[in-house]
Image 1 (cartoon, one colour):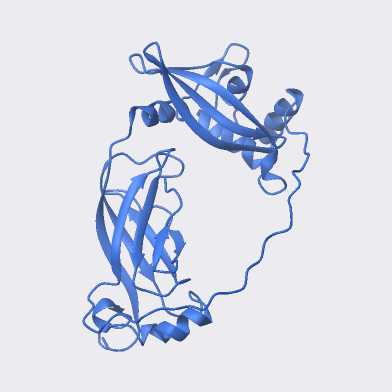
Image 2 (image 1 turned 90 degrees about the vertical axis):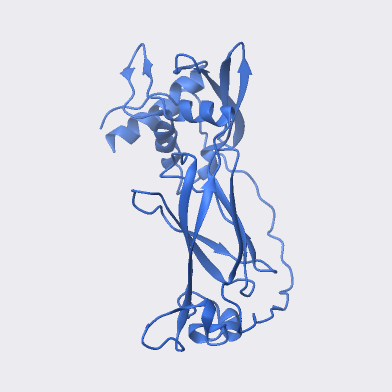
Length: 277
């Protein structure tokens, strides 16, 4: 708590986070659309019609795919790095044709290195997981789905209740030079002349500041995006963020030869240091 108070006081002294809330208009509404879906034939052996991945601008994994299940079906994706514990599962909802796009997936904020990864696609067909509309189509326990495409809940009774449980191997591509520069800044643990070495890397400092407002007013302070551009053999890494709902930027310099990172302005300095516990 003392650590958080120090950070918030520092931010307020520098003029950030006035607490002003942005005005929002009334949410739009639309009439519900009827769900249309065709049951896969009994000869279907896999309900996962497509699964691919790419990196987003921040370097996180984004999965895109299509599952032969009704719109609105809840499906969970779990990435399993080799030799490490599985990452936090990510929930996706299927669109009109069974397609989905996941949120960006990282290893507790760190970008995953390139290589092969196991991905589990999981969905249960019960009231705890699915809506009544979805269950009305697939049946309780997947009763209306092709049995060859399901994993039995009890192997002794393969024709009884089943679930979608499939494992795929995906290949995550290399990071771009821009992403390498951004990650170098995020992972840098920097010093300031007046306060010494930070207790956290830049990513951790930013998270601490965001957490002070996350429950009450997230846009009081929130990182909105990272970018990088080359300049004279070095990289200028820019963080876009909201401060009291106003868009602002700050920058660091990354030298790919020496691997050194330095902040370039007061806001970047602020996000480069945190107190010890």
